[in-house]
Image (cartoon, rainbow, N blue to C red; front, side, top):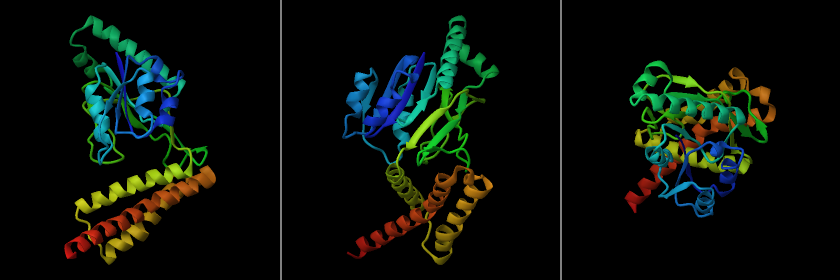
Length: 277
């Protein structure tokens, strides 16, 4: 049995592409959607497409909602996707073949999980193609961009500590065939919206760690880390191969550090103001 799980928030447009007839929906035994109180028609669209929808609040870390859905999955094989990701045909074939193989073994052995873990991967990294400014990025550290999203139920979970994190796996990790097509940033406006979300989350992380505003940290986060990130992505990882999209992506990736630091500064100043008010 295959369970497909995703968390959503105002993904009405993306969800139609994700749950299209050419997607993983054709082979999924159950689809679980954990929705963070969307204000658009996301939940209604998912319900019409036979998904089980759980309505909840938006958490500080979106992975909390993802894990909520993973905990509800009943399938022996679980695939976690984002609403802006589509499985290509090769990935669908790989997952379908794997699911059928598991069912054959399960039917012949009640304790199949132990035997499987001893001889096979319990989770799989899936290579991902990322769209940015109308181009599929090939370099700059953005391909193959493997993510652990497919696993045997009970052998993996999300740490729920960071925006960008991999699943923690109890066992061997394999490599899936096919790709996830990641339509994360179909427009630059979409990118900026997510840029704001990620940098704000990072600012609060830095605040929780007790990072201080001083000349050393200002130089580090405003100059050193942005420059280092840009040079690593654009030169060392050959982001220049992707042309202007590669250049812009490297620049903006470096700016994550500077903007997060400035937001941290704002957090601290706001707290000072409240104390003195």
